Length: 187
Image (cartoon, rainbow, N blue to C red; front, side, top):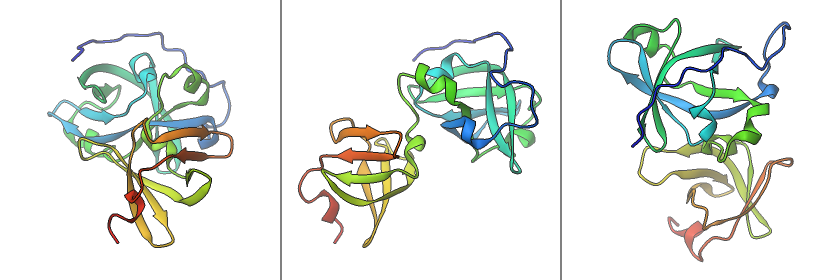
Protein backbone atom coordinates (compact mmCIF):
# COMPACT_ATOMS: atom_id res chain seq x y z
CA UNK A 1 0.00 0.00 0.00
CA UNK A 2 1.32 3.41 -0.93
CA UNK A 3 0.86 6.43 1.32
CA UNK A 4 1.42 9.82 -0.20
CA UNK A 5 0.29 13.40 -0.12
CA UNK A 6 0.34 15.21 -3.40
CA UNK A 7 0.42 18.97 -3.85
CA UNK A 8 0.27 19.94 -7.50
CA UNK A 9 -0.11 23.18 -9.36
CA UNK A 10 -3.58 24.69 -9.32
CA UNK A 11 -3.91 25.00 -13.08
CA UNK A 12 -7.33 23.91 -14.34
CA UNK A 13 -7.33 22.53 -17.86
CA UNK A 14 -10.59 24.34 -18.60
CA UNK A 15 -10.45 27.76 -20.18
CA UNK A 16 -12.43 30.75 -18.98
CA UNK A 17 -15.93 30.12 -20.29
CA UNK A 18 -19.43 29.80 -18.96
CA UNK A 19 -19.44 26.22 -17.64
CA UNK A 20 -17.94 22.75 -17.79
CA UNK A 21 -19.99 20.22 -19.78
CA UNK A 22 -20.26 16.47 -19.33
CA UNK A 23 -18.91 15.98 -22.86
CA UNK A 24 -15.56 17.41 -21.68
CA UNK A 25 -15.26 14.83 -18.89
CA UNK A 26 -14.83 11.13 -18.22
CA UNK A 27 -15.78 9.18 -15.10
CA UNK A 28 -12.62 8.36 -13.15
CA UNK A 29 -14.21 7.02 -9.98
CA UNK A 30 -16.99 7.31 -7.45
CA UNK A 31 -17.32 8.67 -3.91
CA UNK A 32 -18.27 5.60 -1.90
CA UNK A 33 -18.45 6.84 1.71
CA UNK A 34 -17.16 9.32 4.25
CA UNK A 35 -14.06 8.63 6.32
CA UNK A 36 -13.82 10.22 9.74
CA UNK A 37 -15.23 13.57 10.77
CA UNK A 38 -12.87 16.02 9.02
CA UNK A 39 -14.49 15.92 5.56
CA UNK A 40 -12.40 13.11 4.13
CA UNK A 41 -14.07 10.52 1.90
CA UNK A 42 -13.25 7.34 0.01
CA UNK A 43 -12.91 7.55 -3.78
CA UNK A 44 -13.12 4.23 -5.61
CA UNK A 45 -11.44 4.30 -9.00
CA UNK A 46 -8.81 2.56 -11.03
CA UNK A 47 -7.20 5.26 -13.04
CA UNK A 48 -3.63 6.25 -12.34
CA UNK A 49 -4.33 9.86 -13.28
CA UNK A 50 -6.12 10.22 -9.91
CA UNK A 51 -2.61 10.12 -8.42
CA UNK A 52 -1.58 13.31 -10.18
CA UNK A 53 -4.64 15.46 -10.79
CA UNK A 54 -4.76 18.74 -8.87
CA UNK A 55 -8.57 18.76 -8.91
CA UNK A 56 -11.63 16.63 -9.61
CA UNK A 57 -15.04 17.57 -11.01
CA UNK A 58 -18.33 16.68 -9.34
CA UNK A 59 -21.90 17.03 -10.62
CA UNK A 60 -23.52 19.37 -8.10
CA UNK A 61 -27.23 19.68 -8.90
CA UNK A 62 -26.65 19.54 -12.65
CA UNK A 63 -23.55 21.76 -12.71
CA UNK A 64 -20.08 20.29 -13.14
CA UNK A 65 -17.93 21.96 -10.50
CA UNK A 66 -14.14 21.58 -10.05
CA UNK A 67 -12.85 20.94 -6.53
CA UNK A 68 -9.16 21.31 -5.72
CA UNK A 69 -7.72 18.37 -3.82
CA UNK A 70 -6.49 19.33 -0.35
CA UNK A 71 -5.11 15.86 0.44
CA UNK A 72 -5.15 12.29 -0.81
CA UNK A 73 -3.60 9.01 0.17
CA UNK A 74 -4.05 5.40 -0.83
CA UNK A 75 -6.37 3.17 1.11
CA UNK A 76 -5.91 0.25 -1.34
CA UNK A 77 -4.97 -0.31 -4.99
CA UNK A 78 -8.32 1.11 -6.15
CA UNK A 79 -9.32 3.38 -3.26
CA UNK A 80 -8.06 6.79 -2.16
CA UNK A 81 -8.86 8.75 0.95
CA UNK A 82 -9.43 12.27 -0.35
CA UNK A 83 -10.35 15.66 0.92
CA UNK A 84 -11.16 18.65 -1.27
CA UNK A 85 -11.00 22.32 -0.39
CA UNK A 86 -14.24 23.58 1.12
CA UNK A 87 -15.32 20.17 2.45
CA UNK A 88 -14.06 20.21 6.02
CA UNK A 89 -16.57 18.18 8.04
CA UNK A 90 -18.47 14.92 7.88
CA UNK A 91 -21.81 16.52 6.94
CA UNK A 92 -20.33 18.28 3.90
CA UNK A 93 -18.62 15.03 2.88
CA UNK A 94 -21.93 13.14 3.17
CA UNK A 95 -23.38 15.50 0.54
CA UNK A 96 -21.00 14.11 -2.09
CA UNK A 97 -21.28 10.39 -1.23
CA UNK A 98 -22.50 8.44 -4.25
CA UNK A 99 -21.36 11.04 -6.79
CA UNK A 100 -19.23 10.14 -9.78
CA UNK A 101 -15.75 11.69 -9.84
CA UNK A 102 -15.01 13.25 -13.22
CA UNK A 103 -11.76 14.36 -14.83
CA UNK A 104 -11.13 16.25 -18.09
CA UNK A 105 -11.09 14.11 -21.24
CA UNK A 106 -7.63 15.51 -22.03
CA UNK A 107 -6.31 13.56 -19.04
CA UNK A 108 -7.83 10.28 -20.17
CA UNK A 109 -4.95 9.65 -22.56
CA UNK A 110 -2.55 10.02 -19.62
CA UNK A 111 -4.39 7.37 -17.64
CA UNK A 112 -2.94 3.87 -17.79
CA UNK A 113 -6.37 2.53 -16.91
CA UNK A 114 -9.79 4.07 -16.90
CA UNK A 115 -12.37 3.57 -14.20
CA UNK A 116 -14.70 0.63 -14.71
CA UNK A 117 -17.57 3.13 -14.46
CA UNK A 118 -16.29 4.61 -17.73
CA UNK A 119 -17.84 1.60 -19.50
CA UNK A 120 -21.41 2.32 -18.32
CA UNK A 121 -23.42 2.90 -21.49
CA UNK A 122 -21.16 0.72 -23.67
CA UNK A 123 -22.72 -2.06 -25.74
CA UNK A 124 -21.31 -5.44 -24.73
CA UNK A 125 -20.52 -8.09 -27.33
CA UNK A 126 -19.59 -11.73 -26.89
CA UNK A 127 -17.46 -12.30 -29.95
CA UNK A 128 -19.59 -10.56 -32.63
CA UNK A 129 -23.02 -10.91 -30.96
CA UNK A 130 -24.43 -7.98 -28.98
CA UNK A 131 -25.48 -9.30 -25.57
CA UNK A 132 -26.71 -6.01 -24.13
CA UNK A 133 -25.74 -2.69 -22.60
CA UNK A 134 -23.58 -2.11 -19.53
CA UNK A 135 -25.92 -0.34 -17.11
CA UNK A 136 -23.88 -0.44 -13.90
CA UNK A 137 -20.67 -1.65 -12.29
CA UNK A 138 -20.72 -3.64 -9.06
CA UNK A 139 -17.51 -2.88 -7.15
CA UNK A 140 -18.84 -3.93 -3.74
CA UNK A 141 -17.17 -7.33 -3.98
CA UNK A 142 -13.53 -8.32 -4.37
CA UNK A 143 -14.16 -8.96 -8.08
CA UNK A 144 -15.58 -6.01 -10.03
CA UNK A 145 -18.58 -6.99 -12.17
CA UNK A 146 -20.13 -5.36 -15.25
CA UNK A 147 -23.95 -5.36 -14.93
CA UNK A 148 -25.27 -5.92 -18.45
CA UNK A 149 -28.93 -5.41 -19.34
CA UNK A 150 -29.88 -8.18 -21.77
CA UNK A 151 -33.22 -9.13 -23.32
CA UNK A 152 -33.57 -11.74 -20.52
CA UNK A 153 -32.64 -9.44 -17.62
CA UNK A 154 -29.38 -8.35 -16.03
CA UNK A 155 -26.31 -10.56 -16.17
CA UNK A 156 -23.04 -9.92 -14.37
CA UNK A 157 -19.74 -10.40 -16.13
CA UNK A 158 -16.42 -10.24 -14.26
CA UNK A 159 -14.42 -7.18 -15.35
CA UNK A 160 -11.21 -9.07 -16.03
CA UNK A 161 -8.70 -8.51 -18.82
CA UNK A 162 -8.78 -12.21 -19.71
CA UNK A 163 -12.38 -11.84 -20.97
CA UNK A 164 -11.93 -8.51 -22.80
CA UNK A 165 -10.87 -8.88 -26.44
CA UNK A 166 -11.24 -5.31 -27.72
CA UNK A 167 -12.61 -1.91 -26.75
CA UNK A 168 -14.05 0.48 -29.33
CA UNK A 169 -14.07 3.82 -27.46
CA UNK A 170 -15.46 5.80 -30.41
CA UNK A 171 -18.56 3.60 -30.86
CA UNK A 172 -18.82 2.74 -27.14
CA UNK A 173 -18.48 -1.02 -27.58
CA UNK A 174 -16.62 -3.62 -25.55
CA UNK A 175 -15.93 -7.07 -26.97
CA UNK A 176 -15.65 -10.13 -24.75
CA UNK A 177 -14.64 -13.75 -25.30
CA UNK A 178 -16.67 -15.32 -22.49
CA UNK A 179 -16.49 -18.89 -21.21
CA UNK A 180 -19.34 -21.11 -22.40
CA UNK A 181 -22.26 -20.97 -19.99
CA UNK A 182 -21.32 -17.71 -18.26
CA UNK A 183 -24.26 -15.83 -19.81
CA UNK A 184 -26.75 -18.55 -18.89
CA UNK A 185 -25.46 -19.39 -15.42
CA UNK A 186 -28.57 -17.98 -13.66
CA UNK A 187 -31.20 -19.41 -16.01
